[in-house]
Amino acid sequence: WLFIIVKDEVEIDKYDYTENLIYSPDWKSFAFIAEKDRKYLIVKDDKESNGYDSVRNLKYSSDWKSFSYEVYKDWRYIIIKDGVEINKYDSVYNWTYSPDWKSFAFTAEKDGKYIIVKDGKESNLYDSVRNLKYSSDWINIAFIIKRDWKDVMIKDGVEFNEYDYVYDLIY
Image 1 (spheres, rainbow, N blue to C red):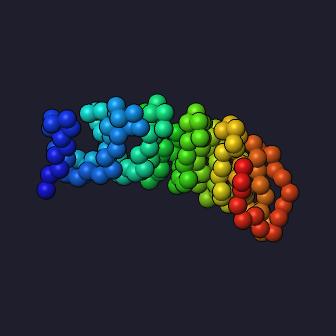
Image 2 (cartoon, rainbow, N blue to C red; image 1 turned 135 degrees about the vertical axis):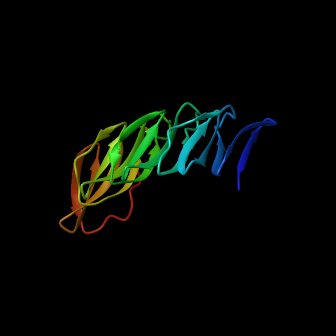
């Protein structure tokens, strides 16, 4: 089988496999995941990325100025945002843009512990991290960590009271 991508009645290329064909919100940019020669790559605006073991989660920001995706290479996960690799991790979760699309954050596993990475800067290491949220002003983040069987809310790096359980954050 060969997958042929045709855009605006023009054949772009042939691939062993394709998925996740998406346009930017302004319809000016087009991207998809493709497999070629047993490697996965991103094709964005007719340009191919490097090959990876796996690629997933293509995302354009709603203002269409930013493009990001997750890759797996050499036994590590990497978030690539606007063509720049954001470190290598054991795994990555819950990556998101702020509501104004100017900030970018995700949860990552590193050496058996968990961190929050916001705009490329890593938080402290924690045993458990969940419920990553941006504030309504779109600048700050909050999340919940587990420490000594208690839940602790972290807001902008500052710890708040311990609780037996925190169900969710409304921030």
